[in-house]
Amino acid sequence: MAWEFLTVYWREMIRFVRFRTQLFSSLLQPALWMGFFGIAMSSNLDRFTSSIPVPAGVVQVDYLTFMAAGVIAMTTLFTSLYGGMSLLFDKNWGLMREMLASPMPRTHIMLGVSLSGMTKSFIQAGIIMVFGLVLGVRFFHGFSVARIAFSVIGVFAFLGLFSLGFLLFSSNISMRLESPEGLQGIMTLLSLPLFFVSNALYPIQAFPPFLQVLSAYNPLTHLVTGIRYFALGNDFFAVGARYTITTGDVLTSFAYLAVFAAVMYLLARRAFERAVVA
Amino acid sequence: METTDIIEVVDLEHTFGEVEAVRGISFAVKKGEIFSFLGPNGAGKSTTINILITLLPLQKGRVRVAGHDVAREPRKVREVIGIVFQEEVLDRDLTVWETMEFHGRIYGIPRDERRRRIEDLLAVVELDARRNERTKNLSGGMKRRLQIARGLLTRPEVLFLDEPTLGLDPQTRMRIWDYIRQVNESGTTIFMTTHYMEEADMLSDRISIMDHGRIVISGTPDELKNTLGEDVVYLETGDDSGAREFLLGMEEVRSITGSPRGLSVAISADGSHALPRIIDRLREAGIEIVSVNLKKPTMDDVFVHYTGRELRDGGG
Image (cartoon, rainbow over all chains, first blue to last red):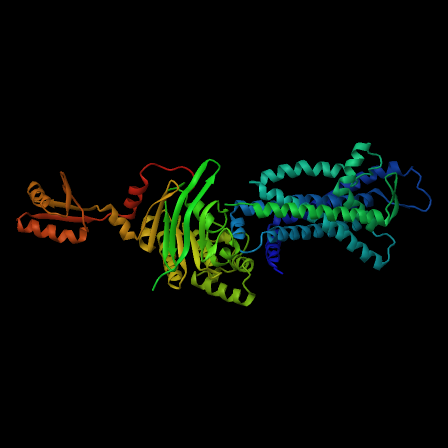
């Protein structure tokens, strides 16, 4: 077993910590979403939806709590989509040549970069959860300590797979591009549809059929489903809709993300093996 | 003792779309020598080097480095070569130590060995006091020294140096020449490119000059300079026309051109041997010699002679 990818990971994390503006903006941005958008939206939506009767025996979830899962997912999506950026810096600064001319297998470059992107997503998700709890997000409400621990592991397992898939995608695209601006353009174009055609901020039950089908294939929808299952439970009522998530649903979503990550891995590996950076 | 070839290039060709960057070149570098690979920008040098260091795939021909075929065993080649790139290839936010550490780790050097070598090399390039400095705060010369130290960390059999002293001040350049000689004396073969001809002349055991995708001439620096056969003696005498008559009778003298300031005598043999005889001959004839100057062709002359005077565009 070769461990060189840990070296790439180590260097990426040094960069993350030393590049102060990136560090602060990446930690601050999700908090701003929660603090401003979350509170503004929930104060409005909760007023409308409070008149909708909640079925007997089903837990009512307020909008801030509902949305927190979406913000975690969205932050992970954005961070992962831009995760390949450091490869473009490596290319522009000639550092990629150092790595490509070394005996280290090329897959280790993308694995190291992906692992560091995953770590950053985990840190962000942790911050949102803690900050959310301060704001009044009722994650893990009424759970036992053991169940909370299990749920946190579940949430991170979903986050890990999801971010891995998109990080490998981003790395793949970055290896084919010349400039960071190119990546920025492509990822901005992708991030908004992925974000809006999902269940991150609102229920998809009221979508037109066409968008419902699209959102069912959207990895972000599966991530949000997983986070809500572990953080809110398998039967709750939010934004005027009842959510029942069976174990089968969660396993399906997890499997979907696993397949997504595997496909992205294979495509990225091909891109790395063929890459010529001279 | 027969010296072995550590780099063998046979009939190498490489094209980028329509552009034939390398048009069938063959050359060999002997183990333990300093080999300079020269040529104007766009001559095909960088393409050739990128194939040698496995950054470009081999299209046509055969290339072996330290006994390994670059197409079939690129990883083996990567394990035994060191590279100092032309451009500044340093992570700005890593410290000097971390830069070395990163390199050592991606080459899989075990920890204790790695630390020992980094200590040694930083001392050699006089950067040990800067080990915790981020590379963006180093001067140009320090950065280059760090890159050389990094290239040596893996104890390569062949060290590729692309323009090792580009843009450095004379003091730093001389220091880097010392390092290059030291490294070479410890047994590492050096494959170097440079646009500084006196650098190639001074350091190299052998030189190849490439132009338009082909190697136009190879040899030792002296051999290359002698191919021009144009040592020139500049003479000022008391009687230029008399001197001209006497000298034209000498077999070493190829031609003489006159100017108001004296005579330029083109010598067909080695000028340093011809000069004493010229002086003797003029003295015997009773012609007063006011001044004498011998000019041997420089590597610049050789370079321009074989690659022409027109300017080249594009990267090499």
